[in-house]
Length: 223
Ligand SMILES: O=C(O)[C@H](O)[C@@H](O)[C@H](O)[C@H](O)COP(=O)(O)O
Image 1: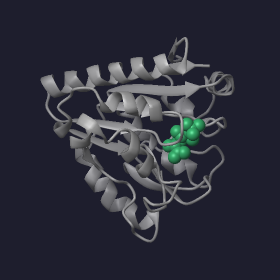
Image 2: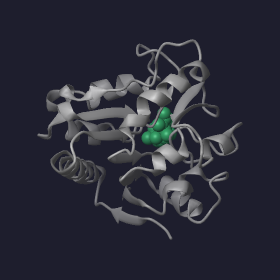
Image 3: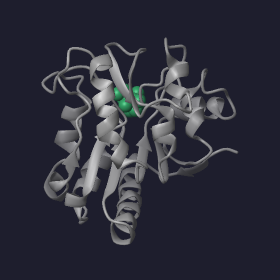
């Protein structure tokens, strides 16, 4: 089975519509169940959507936000996904959300992963998961061909593990933690990513990690 793909006339409409849809799903959880969790990608694509979402009226104090993955760099490094998130999402009404920072300052992501897994477990299943994707079909820090990718994809993987494949060491939520999300959205822009997504459909996650999420996801796309 492949994902539903929603194509928007432009990136601004994608950002506004997706922010509204995420807010609706969070609100439903808050009203029906209680505390909610929102897990979001780093990278450059989601910043405008984060800005739109940050202004929406929600019971943010009952929402815990965390990244899909983080580059193992401190917040003052331009490569920090956390820094991007603090500038875009954690502002205005959304500043009251709880933020679980995946960068702990430990010397290595390997050393930090077990404690992070324990902190994350009570927040599962994720209420709303938003994933990005690279042109190489990676998502979170699940990079095709990377050492240890099979362990990150394993059904019994702990929620958080160190990952290889990017420019610096990384930490990532693993496939089972991400797949357990109640609502999954994939946000992509540009024809190259659309072609990569189509190539990933039906492929083995070892070659195309995004394919591990396509069955249950809604893809949001604009040129
Ligand atoms: O830390 C990261 O790099 C991300 O979490 C990663 O999985 C991202 O979503 C894709 O690489 C797409 O990134 P762009 O939006 O910058 O293309």
